[in-house]
Length: 291
Image (tube, rainbow, N blue to C red):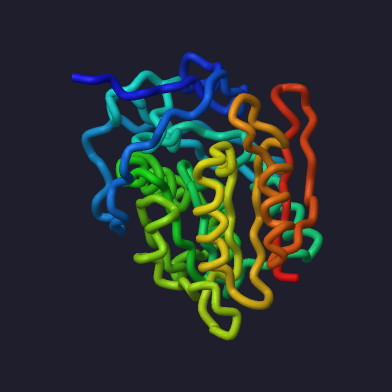
């Protein structure tokens, strides 16, 4: 039986340091196999057979719960491996997710963003900390997407439930519509309920799209960008994107992705924050909006 191609995504050897050292690639991406078909995953499908534990993570003035599951239990893979087109690292806590929550909290405090009544989509959600933040801030709908249905069942749904159970009594999320979707970016629009197919005269679409560390793969960037244009509400929709400036070895990163957007001419980009803490490559949070 042929082995699946893998490459090292994280320098850590265990889950406890999984939010450190992201974004350094040592070899080109191997060809990707055909993706699994897109599916909606229901909250009742949460896995009860995979051990799930939580740690608290302080993000500025916000405290959220970070779920932990074993990659080998879920996928039969070592914790440091990523298999392109099979497992895309959704069980790891990417440091960009923390950067994004920090940026959203600052944007909320300054009045640049408001979640009540808004329809939110988080792409490549994994732990879904940004999406969970949107729930706690009163979003009308929060839809969470990941490549793997297993990630949603074993990590995303339990992590959402854990965080909502710990919410302050003053926070009500009972009216928030939360749904989960698995699939590749080139196909998942077939299931997402608020797609507007890029037509700017339609009323549909998501008011806010969130994504963290989704642009490391150049081969997937075009389909990701096309999905954004299919889903972003016009004319006031906004994308908040956290990523590294460069993902060494494969050519991805914010500069390469923003260059593609600039050439397309549909969206404008604004730098929200920059992180240069020395723990990894320079990290950034960008806001994308219609010109």
